[in-house]
Image 1 (cartoon, helix red, strand yellow):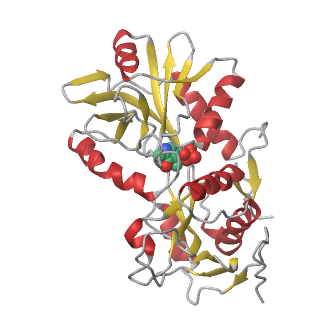
Image 2: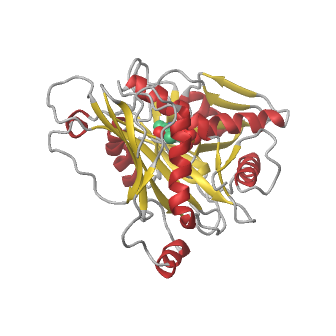
Length: 370
Ligand SMILES: *Cc1c(COP(=O)(O)O)cnc(C)c1O
């Protein structure tokens, strides 16, 4: 029997096992080369919310299509938010995740901005534990592999009027992820979008919501057409300040050791990786400046050699070195140059913590399978 106390900050999950889960051999074949976001585990988490009943009917159920009415408001007005975090298998077989309470809190902030109900942190953490309890065997053990967890929340009230939905669903799906860079970490080229913006003052740039990604796809196509892996967005108001990439935060490293990253201005996403990188850099006694970063500072700094490294960061790729910045009629940096020293060293330290290869001195890890 499922407990459905409206204001509960804990729910009891019921479980319906998948009728035909993949065999050990099928799973092993997928985990040998999982790619990213292509394969999904045998189960999913679902929790319903209604304006009258609050969060209720928390359950683990077979992975499968959602039944959505064609009038479900998420399909029309994009009232949707999501999260992304990973489960890592340590050498002793145990399963851990990285700073999940940060994702829980960010999901709550995103919910407030998108007029969705806040999911209490204990329920979020339990939802992550539940998917691992059902599908822990899907956490791969290969180098740089993980199980990517994708919690999301959608408005699923059948109603075409424009207002916040009174029926909402929260789900967690899980997808095994291979090493992002196969054959070693290689710097990427990124494209400076000057025609399009991702977020404006008072908009949804600080929320993790699908609409921001929808707005980034056309410039992302433009980037790809110009041989670039990602798009860099400037602030919408003046087109002079660096915001972030479509899905990653950015850092500049000065030759003198200073590290600079755009401040949380309300139009960029507050990355958990960003915050962790700032901490690890400061732990080394290096200075991190969170402030306005002008695109001219980047272009001129790289051109003069004063800026020696540039990288982007986010959960999916951890840290991606940026070799070259390209835009209409210009390019700075060297796409063939090796990844920067600090970039690779911080990347190594962060993944060592995540995979349990060094001490977790900041208490960033949460065990999921015990
Ligand atoms: C998720 C996301 C990031 C990275 O956040 P992490 O918590 O580090 O994964 C950066 N920018 C955008 C737009 C994002 O959606």
